Image (cartoon, rainbow, N blue to C red; front, side, top):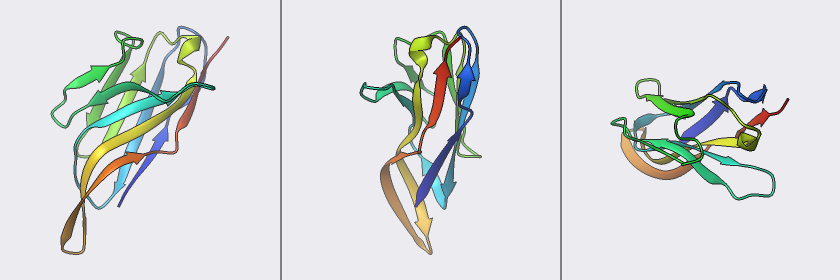
Length: 125
């Protein structure tokens, strides 16, 4: 199976920066789209950014030109560089894999929709 663990969250002042990381572990053969989502208190989970295996990216309008998503396909890691942070960026940030192929013994399996436990980002003075 596939497990995700995020790191890098914390408390930062408005205008500051944070870099989130998410490592996928398990007997992974390949990963399709990796992404970041966030959920603020009292709100639904929303897309922040996604990146394909080939490096194509997609961003929510609210974070364009401030956040940058990247990935290391060898290390099965996705990053989110967050600059010019605003109080409205405060949320729990979740890492997601939409599709992955993993192996167990001599067999390959396909799985969908994996999530990490989340990491808290708080932007406040």
